[in-house]
Length: 282
Length: 263
Image (cartoon, rainbow over all chains, first blue to last red; front, side, top):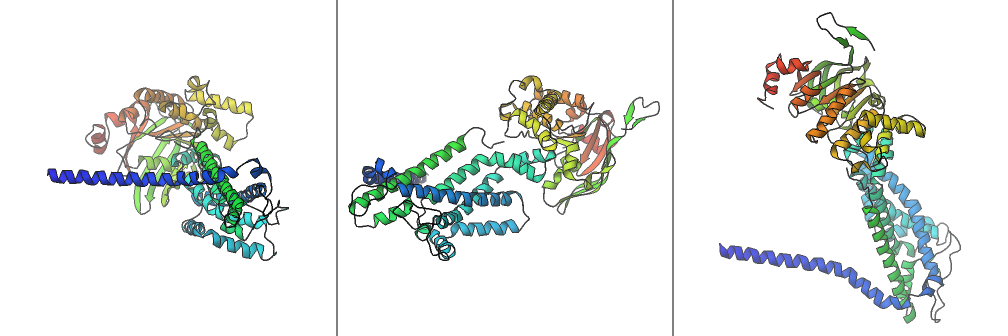
């Protein structure tokens, strides 16, 4: 008896230690990446990095202002295209529709979510770049938007479904029609959650590189329009990191650091939004 | 509204029934939940529906404003007349503006106290700002909540106590001036003091609207209701004046239930 007790206690202790170790390891990966980026990139981060264009090869200094603005433009376009489509589709899946149709749409949405981003890139390249024979900001933004759509659909649907049935019933019992209930009770109650999911979704595509390689491509100068090649942080990181120049390597690290900090900021923002008062509980 | 005076001996005025149900069957898919229910609910009175859990009294209540339609495969057949109009054929949105409902668990919207009460008014009619405030105040007064909340109308409804939240839900339902108010065990989650407040309220409300309350609590039925119906296994066993039901019920099942022999 006491032997079995001791054995059980030993196994318990072992499993506890193992689980704790894995948890710490996971958390330390993030800290390790962050530390690595700071170590290598912090030196290259200065005022110039945010305000100047890249310098020609061989000249020291310069920055990535065009890539920062380009990334912002790409994300704006992706948000304007992907979020409304995904949101309305999510509302439909959560609130309307018959029996089998939503199930089919949901399944296809999951498939779209699983499509590798490079495949999305090839698709956008074939449809948006080849016909006009020019890389463009628009093509990049739409490619990213295709990735935003399924993320938004899923988060919208989940947060809408989390709104208690009792609230819908209360509104229905007051003589509200179905769409009124959705517009005036369900969506406001789920608003914070949906907004949080959207911020995280957009933050996720901020780091997508593959679809941009053959859509918005890159540009060493300011982009002159929606139909022109445009620089972005992820593509700059790729280009600079594989270059043979020491100075470019440092700038690639710096760009990586900026990108990571922006994502962390988006995460913090999302948490603040979700933690705000009056969250959807009944 | 037609007022019928009963022959001398009955000694009180009786109004025409507000709701007349006859031969009502109800199904959840293949499972039948109500069997041939028929009764006439008097206008501007409190009617209580009692019976053990699962007896169909809540289902019955939900047929009166067609709230059962949110459940898939639920269907009702038979005749339910509201002032002679067929409830089962009416537009449910129009029906629910006339037949309000208060639920077992208080369910205020995650909005301010004011916006909760104003919700029904805003979706149903277009009122000026001052009219809206007036209506909100009137409804909160009718629900005996005005004095407790008049200084915090802009605060979230969740900040209220459980009993206050339930009265807020009553005020919200009253704001659209329903002809009938359905209450589904409205006090089951409340303490005796909050319960007493709601019971007082029901009595005063019955002057202006027809009230049907489902309750597990037989004393509550005895206290608030003029008429009581007893449901068992999906059938309406007996429907009569509350006094009759509790003192000399006609059916053995009713007597067994009210004397606590089962249920």
